[in-house]
Image (cartoon, rainbow, N blue to C red; front, side, top):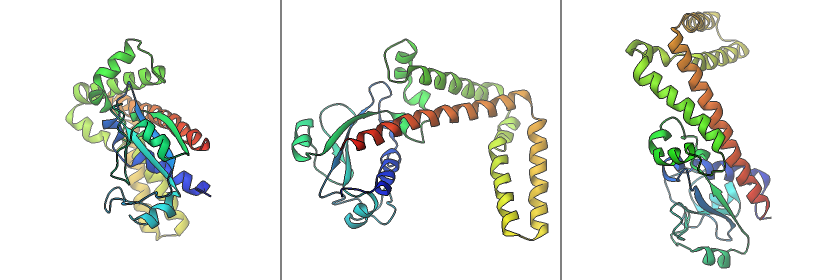
Length: 247
């Protein structure tokens, strides 16, 4: 067997997270990727970055991902690079070297780091999408752009310095605090600790409920953007899984 279902799951997450794709893959053209079955998978794997689940050497690479490898070409110049090997291959060479291969075009929003800052990193590509140039996900990206643009405008031009400080403790932090409180309750920690956490949560709830409307809108755009980003990443993840199923 070339890889197990568990190894496939790890590999998909690894591919999506192992580089700052949100910076390096063009938003308009995407990046060219080959996923291959490589009998020498993990050979010469870098010793420090990115960290692998069981250790950074060939044995532990195979333990984590089986024989799955990927090659990427982000500039579409027909030079494909791999994390584990120093060789560079063309389309033709890759197909000859790896009989089991599949091609997939992936976009920068597969990366968790794809956020409102992408407006600056992909400014020209966003403009083309807004102008109607064809793309795989034009409507989702237009929605992402609109919400991100509003979020940046609120932060830079509408919120006060005090608002910006308060923005760091909002609905997301409240959810985390409530989850922590439930864990404390399950572990039966001392009542004083539990009461202290509960008091802090009630104060945060009060702060959120009485916050300025502009600050509430900022929190809302933050959530909208995260939801859109998750949807975009899910689409890329599905593409990778489908591609691997063809090997």
